[in-house]
Image (cartoon, rainbow, N blue to C red):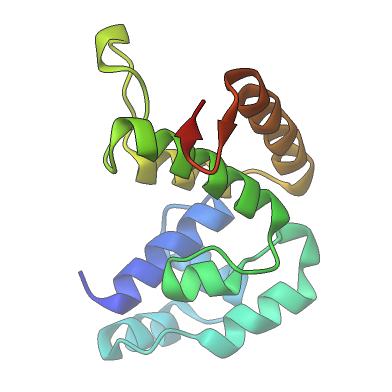
Length: 144
């Protein structure tokens, strides 16, 4: 998959939209202008940064959208990443959940769902994850 397509997919996840034309409208681009950029593989970074500044309630993590890695300023993302690393340490890189329980979810799906949460939800998730890890006595990806 091309870098543009990956960036677009992450932006759609963050905005909780499905269609390119929805992304174009949110970024302030016409459908035609967005389509042209997509054909050229030229992601509208300037529009993304303007969206982050102009719509802070969206909690846009431009670093994540552009690179696929959580931005350094996201403490909730750090807590969640730490929890996922702890789970990965026990379950491997590809799924979350105990195979014997019948419940498994690809880590990327879980991350995608978490990225759609608003700030208040992320704070709640962070506290729940902290409580679960404390209860399981998990520290830095190793179970005690």
